[in-house]
Image (cartoon, rainbow, N blue to C red; front, side, top):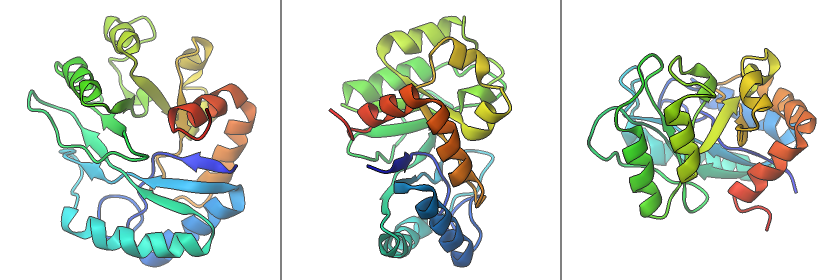
Length: 214
């Protein structure tokens, strides 16, 4: 069984990820060489800081999926959904029922717990993206405890493990998923593989979350 990437922006002409088809192919080659056989691409949805050309998602995904298949990679479409208000957001689930959420970096979102719980009631597995980026997020915070209690999974980016920004979360054993949040960096797949090798328990946890191990 190969490795899985669950957070990446690899569709050209869609969001702030890879810019060209050539760049996408180069990054896919890097994933294949690093031992990944599943890659989930997660274009931004509703993020007020990012322009996402949603009309290009399906077309670019179909093209990239064919390119990935030639490299032995199962290319999977998901989404990184921004939660910012009271209205329930539309989500793009991957691996049947996983949804990736992101929120405001500076201010604790008022409705995150509500949305997470509502999504779970609809049968989704909820993942909060790159927890190390949120200034309001704390290992001892009430919202952290509440999200944990209802079963929300926490994801950290590779760089935050490398530079120790995520160390406090690793020490408390609340990191469930490590991903790259790759926006076109060919070095990230190999670096992510190395980080996962250093954290075998998280790798095992990821396989359970994504249904790759029973």
